[in-house]
Length: 175
Image (cartoon, rainbow, N blue to C red):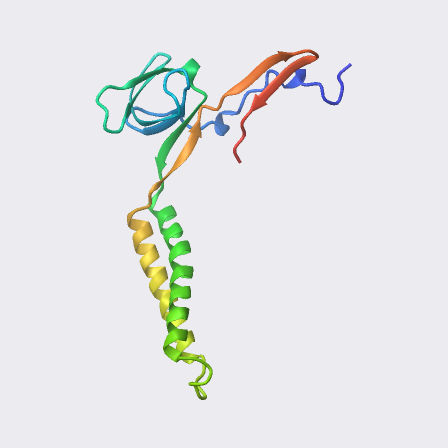
């Protein structure tokens, strides 16, 4: 009889194809952990993939480091963002920064409550509005022209081992 915590039924579970990221291609920038091949995190360009071995050339190095897939704990690949994602990121950073800067400059230019008459707060509001527009446009321009990239985990490892009362399973899930 299976108990509530019996893990044997999960031993054959495999990730769906849609849950896996594409494996790294030759020419992509990768970072990986393979303590037996290189201490710490190995980061560089994937120059070749032969059988079960990856060849990674570190920056400012001439000879690649050979790493067997059995030694790899995890692999991240640097994937470029699209220009639209960069544009959105630039606007999300530029708009609040521009608004805050414009607000501060407007308040400093206004002088304070003692020095304003009927138009108290007008210069602060105008500065905030101008800063918002400027920050949004500059953020969109910079973000769209230099979208950057992000690290994507590929080839997730699933570990299964025999336990005293069944099978133990460990996996990493990124949502």
